[in-house]
Amino acid sequence: MHESVLVAADRIRRLEVQGARNVAITAIKAIEKGAKRSKARGKEAFLKELSDAKEVLFASRETEPLMRNAIRHVIHAVEESPEETVKELVDVVSQVSKRFLEGLERSKEKIAAVGSKRVSNNSKVLTHCHSSTVTNLLLRAKQEGKSFEVICTESRPVFQGRITAKEMLDAGIETTLIVDSAVRYFMNEVDLVVVGADAITSEGNVINKIGTSMVALAAKEARTPFYVVSELLKFDPATIHGDYEIIEERSSSEVWDDPPSGLTIRNPAFDVTRREFIHGIICEEGIISPHSISELISRKYPWIFEAT
Ligand code: RUB
Image (cartoon, rainbow, N blue to C red; front, side, top):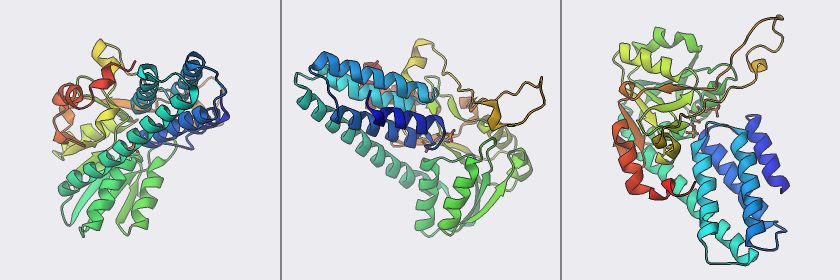
């Protein structure tokens, strides 16, 4: 296995790379780099290398269907390719990866264009954790000349909310950081909640940073619109066959690195927000109902169901 794959997997595991998009981008670039340095002598050996890299990257974070869809897409293209020489197959990997990354970039900009319309002038927007798709949308609203305030949760245990807060401040957006448990306290003054997604299930439920479902609950009680901002490719095709999305459970040391002996500490990284709490999913196709996710995926990305 090429070192680029091991290094990428390690960076993802240690949260040096965080957020579903960044994880997928890092993984696909590592696959491409590894493929370019391949020493395989034929198609079968080349595919075995790709498959080994896939396993290592999949294991780096369990709840990341965008990364899984990306890698499967590349491997599927190699499998289906009529090319036989490794040199030609490396080109296939490069071309498919490039197209995939360009598509992701286009989606991100489309999402920002659609979603920024929901940010009103002189409003307050609350977000949880750090989602690059959400911050891009907020930056776009700022570029459009809107004046608004962002409330960021700190997002325990590893404080990704601080990344969001810094990004917002750097862009000149008025920003307030709150502890996660203060969400309900502030919700009455919030006009809009926007959160990212790590996974979307076939039923339209959304998996995102732990605490997202409590934010959604508070938003519902306060009648504050709650939107998920996400590329459709975060859809997990396995959920249509009845599989549950696996929720990654991380080390207890992230919560308390020196706990008293005998204490049980649990540290799930994500939770599930049910579709009835979600006003809409802001995606590259516009603002959609969570109910329509499977149908949209079948229309726009039918290959998701083939590349297993
Ligand atoms: C990050 C998180 C983000 C989504 C979406 O969790 O939950 O909201 O990944 O991010 P972690 P993006 O920090 O544990 O990776 O919009 O950038 O894909």
